[in-house]
Length: 252
Image (cartoon, rainbow, N blue to C red):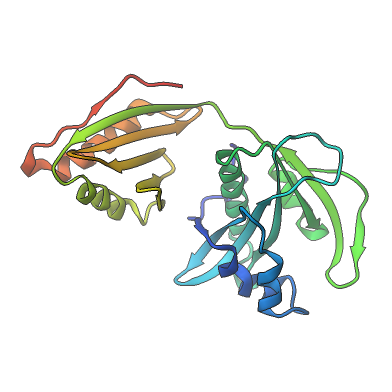
């Protein structure tokens, strides 16, 4: 998915409630933090944020919800609570969280994304491929809005699976995650470690005497180079044990 200019800030997935203080300060000062938190209590919702230490400085929340406009799509998601701390505006943080949330929605099976955008943010959404649907309106408490939406679909990608036999698979997964944690994002999901860098993504699954790997790159990415980089790092970490990564043939 193409990224708007400036969308390079590191982003992380967080619980929606963690973004409430920033959203209350920037978007809904007439409400309490508790009220803002409660408004985002939607089943299946998640949030994307940019952090400065422990502080959320940019965020957006997404949850499954049909679009009120007849725009198609069988798996619609709504964006809410897009906010950037005033002192951090102009650094591309809004674009960064928007790119990441669209990618995450695709990963979760979404095919349509919509939002009720504040009119000053309209340009940000248009640069990310959104279009206006319906008529603008004015909310007496939070100002003029316009509804916007866009279709989403997974970009063509390539994936290759591999394995590294070892008696300590969890240790090497943790070591690679720690090494790359400052260059991208690291998440734990269902017993697996997911590392995402600009070059690609690798999923590490510790097994019985083996570390299973799944490396992927977006359309146009260099899968051979990415798998080589992953293997070189793991094999260097396991040099004393003479560990070796083997890869299967790539699959689309």
